[in-house]
Amino acid sequence: QKEVEQNSGPLSVPEGAIASLNCTYSDRGSQSFFWYRQYSGKSPELIMFIYSNGDKEDGRFTAQLNKASQYVSLLIRDSQPSDSATYLCAVPGGNQFYFGTGTSLTVIP
Amino acid sequence: NAGVTQTPKFRILKIGQSMTLQCTQDMNHNYMYWYRQDPGMGLKLIYYSVGAGITDKGEVPNGYNVSRSTTEDFPLRLELAAPSQTSVYFCASSYGGDEQFFGPGTRLTVL
Image (cartoon, rainbow over all chains, first blue to last red; front, side, top):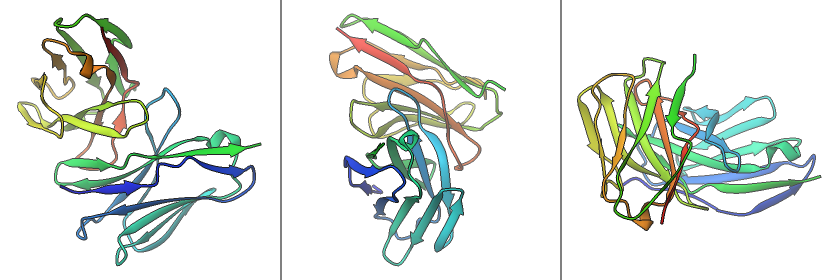
């Protein structure tokens, strides 16, 4: 059973700050990692994925992967109130995706 | 391109009733999934399918059944509904094991 763990939060940051969300995973052989955002009452939507060690940037979002330490993080720069949501980390395994329980982020204006 | 569609959006069932949650995707994805999400919790996989005619159990399959007769459709059947099945149900699809696209969800209450 693969495990994906996230700090459930809630995490609160002021508008304009950097929000840092972390995820650890149990399967050392995992190759790809996905971050989903879920607004309250809505379905999850993909915001980033990362395959290689190091950083991947997309606009205000940066995913960081450290396979040796088995963690992946998501940084949100210049946080906006519209970033307030739950962020889910997901790791594929076999024919399934394994999701963390999500971290709730609130950006305070 | 509608993506993944689910019906109904909301449903209230009485204990012991049965119903089918519908899921359709128009992206020609081979993989389809059913998840449930309880309040404040993550997604738990109920069943998944890697192609028409092929289904397999996920983490929480008890009380549910699925079928996959076409690439597009993946209905989820609840038999003898119980209060423990009160949840939000999400259908998702993907091409291979890549990014999953989610439907809007079905909010089910069993009273």
